[in-house]
Every structure is written in structure tokens, then in C-alpha cells.
Amino acid sequence: MKFDVYCDESNPEVLKDKAANKFLVLGSIWLPTDSRDQLKADIKHLKEIHGYKNEIKWNKVSPSSEAFFFELIKYFFKNPNLRFRALLVESEKVDLIRFHNDDGELSFYKFYYQLLHHWIYDYNEYSVFIDHKINKDHNRTNKLWEVLNRANLFSSILNVQAIHSKESLGIQLADILTGCINGKFNGKLKSTAKLSVISEIEQNLKNPIQQTSKSVEKLNIFRINLQGGW
Image 1 (tube, one colour):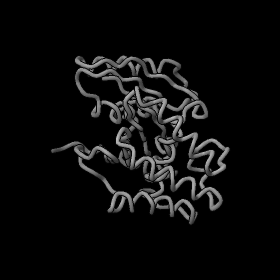
Image 2 (cartoon, rainbow, N blue to C red):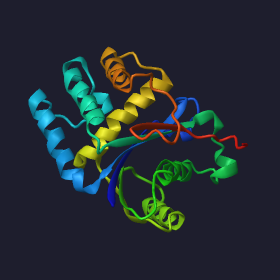
Image 3 (tube, rainbow, N blue to C red):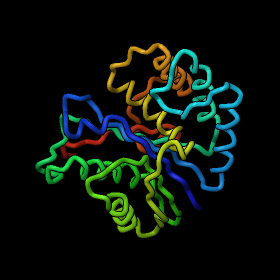
């Protein structure tokens, strides 16, 4: 079976500046490739209903757009083809010098590998789309593709492609959910509209946003252990 994966991130700066925030959050929307067009049509329809004309982004959540984002969250939970996985990286525990050649950019893509690898299953094909960012090493996405393919011998990673978020409603949806996880775990939100969107997620979950086990499929949150051990 073929799958699309759309990825976004919050707080990548913490890999170089531990004081910037407590967590880096990487997020990903997973869906069967043959449902991609329906996802686009459905989200465009929601935008038309609510008169929302902007790119869908967490930093665009406001009292005037709150109703649209509520409907977007409800759509995610009602659509059986959509799954979300987030990876939490605690900034204080990242050791760039010891494990990442003192290279924050390298560590960023290593954590992307951790986000993706554990949800790649044998005998499937995957197309991965990540939000475009300017890298010192222009081969980062190709290297990520190579490493994922080597680590998953019985599945096929068709591509890992960096695209601008404005070109992808899948990345935009990932942006919203990643922003919610970021807001919940970093705990610095003052916006009542954003807090309300987080509350809408928790109502759909029927429990608080929290770290989950690997077996949770709809909204999975993995806090990586960087201390080693059992």
C-alpha cells in the first residue's frame, strides 16, 4: 500500500539554544496516497465555508478564525484515513558535541529519522514531504531518504522531498497539530484562541494531550529518551 507523510516542526532553534524552549516538536500526518485528493478537497471546502483565505498555520489561530480551526480538528478525528505522530525532544538532554558532531542541523535530521522510522511498516511504499528549510548541507533530505531506505529493507521510501508549506495542505494540517503539541508541552501559551483549539483536541481525545504508547494510532506522541538505559 502507498502512503503519504507530511511533516512540520516547532522550535528547531532549541537544538542550538537550550534556553529558547523546553522541547523541539516534530509532527507528521500519515494518510493513504489514494486519499490525498479527497483530503485537499475537504480542507478547501472547510476554508470556503468559513471564509478562511490564509495559509493554515498555528500562528494564524485567532478569535476570528477559531471556528474554522475547530472544524479542522473535528475533521481530523472523524477521518479514519488520517493519523498523526509527534516526536518530543527535550532540549536540555541534547548533546550535540558527543552525538552529533556539534552540528544542530545534523541532529535535526536524525530526530526526523526517529519520527518516521518507527511508523514505516514492511511491504508498503512511502512518499515523505517535509517543510522546506534552508540547510548548510544541501544533501540533508537525500541523506534522510537513503538512511530510511537502508533501515527499512522490506518497504520502499519513494522520496523525501522538501516543499514549501503553502504548496501542501497536508503540511499545513501537520503544522496545526504540531503547534498544539508544542503549545501543550512547552506551556507558554497566552492566546485564548489557541488554548481553545488545544481544548478541542482534548475533547475529541477524551483525555489530556499527553505522551502515548507506540500502539496509539490516531494521535501518537513519543517523547524520545536521550539518556539511554533500559
